[in-house]
Length: 328
Ligand code: UFG
Image (cartoon, rainbow, N blue to C red; front, side, top):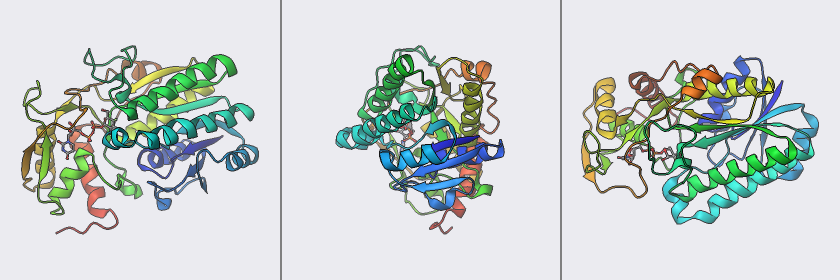
């Protein structure tokens, strides 16, 4: 049972590789290591290369009996996607098209796609169900939606089955396995607040304190990366049972504000965090909370590690061990 995992050396991909291996699959990882880390891949077979390298894809699809593709490899910074959209369309859409075309050629039928709550844009309804209008507010979300559309068409014409996993805010780490969040540059709230807890940053900018929320800061639905990884493994099983293609939200169904996240980091780490109230960050929806009922009922997904305390404790343990970080 071989599964091609693009971006398998990255943050979420590496956790999925581990979950797949533990469930008896052989992960075949393809990663260009632009964001990924070779040492994060401890199971399966590793190929370094570009997603759209059709020669390499042909080799992989010929040498391995790939029953499904999990496609993590993508650029994922909202702000950067606004200033450099060409990079996003090239990486996230064109390269993915090449991958899909090779799948069709080699008769690989199952596709599990790392999609995002960013496809919904500014939500009209909270919690957000999968049927919600897809109206992304930035190029990043648009490139992810473009791939969803491509899959819908490929599925009708070429009989490809897909699962879109629309992640909310991935966080936490499987620190005992030596994997966790390690982006450069880092833009995500939890690792930034942990950096401040370590003394590697003087203060945390809180982007926007005048949102229509309980304390004026944005609310997000944080989901542990190990729970996301389990959902991928379940999606592979689901497609193997020849079930219907579909989209699944992955969140916990509960939201926490930026200030609440900072408070819990203070509790978990015992460190005081200095904050600075900063202007809103462009394109941030005030509230994003998932309705994940479908994943729970249909995929039989049971998030186990996603209390915010557990997420932050595991992220903290990883952050202290992360190569290059030294506790002050
Ligand atoms: N934030 C701060 N200060 C920081 C960093 C973040 O106040 O230094 C705030 C943000 O403004 C936001 C919240 O913390 O309100 C969470 O921000 P993140 O950057 O951690 O996460 P996002 O919700 O912006 O991003 C996530 C995914 C993206 C996805 C997006 C959809 O990481 O891939 O949700 O909106 F596109």
